[in-house]
Length: 156
Image (cartoon, rainbow, N blue to C red; front, top):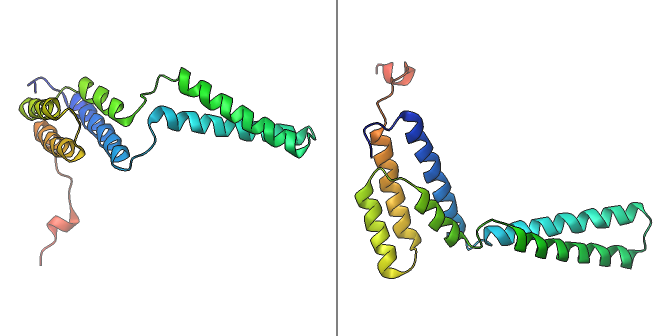
């Protein structure tokens, strides 16, 4: 952490941490990788579009369905091969952590060492670091002026 970290920089770090947390959630749920998910959505959209267009042109049912399936498959394959999205969520997590400038650099170095030794990202271990880093970023923020609170001012 640098003493010159401004509030906007610290808020940007909190947003980065939220994106890392989202990637961890996808890993935990064993979601399709970003590239595969994108390719499947693009293929489904292309298939639906061809199916609808063919319906407007009064194309027969079998040709209409076949054309939609072929369009969906071709679009999915092309989207997968041309996409610059990470192939897996582990790849995404790796690049997110590589870009992140930690506030708690000792904890970050410990996470690096853990991954280096185990050759795998353990979701629980990354979550522990994430929680620690979030607290460190919050503590680095200057105290905010507290707004008037009816709850806190209430006398019993």
